[in-house]
Length: 287
Image (cartoon, rainbow, N blue to C red; front, top):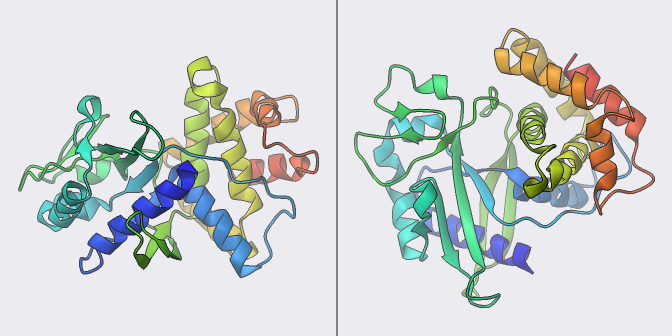
């Protein structure tokens, strides 16, 4: 049920932004859910025949193109939309997380948008002030920040366009277009996320990220796999690519590796998952 509220929230935001130049890039668990739904509708052949069931997710990771932060006046419609739809900045993550209560679920349940962007080094020499936690536009200041994602080194390349249609929370029928990261970028971000959480009990030991990594590869088309290998070849000298290679070697090297064990711990794990192929594909892409 929560996922339906997220879908409606995204549709409402798209409606408010329909006459602007802001294109929404959706990552995280909700981006993977959209990816799986799109694959089901298209019927196109993918690398694996066995897909996981879509997992539930609690928020929407919304990636902003770096040029929108550099020319921050273009982001004014986004802040206006958040205000109009009743979202408020989360106090401890001010201006890069916006949330509102969902009274239909409970007085404490919230819808949340988490704003992210590309690598921090993109903003060198610009007016955007950055640190590891945030990219902060200064001219003009509009109350929109974003968290840099240093491992998203190919964020804007080969984006997947997805059209979504449905009813908003207010009952309006709305359609719009969002974009999903390419396979290579999605994998790098999820491998980094798993590496940060696989020992953290508070984060469920990264089990959901291990599942996401499998889901991304399982739903990759043959054409997208070729693109992913091309992006790999262009990225081999990048320090974040090299770190991802180490993550795969240390955590996904074989069936007894912690990444595979965490995947098996997921309630969505299925006995027909193609683990040998999964491990081989990760090694081929991050070798």
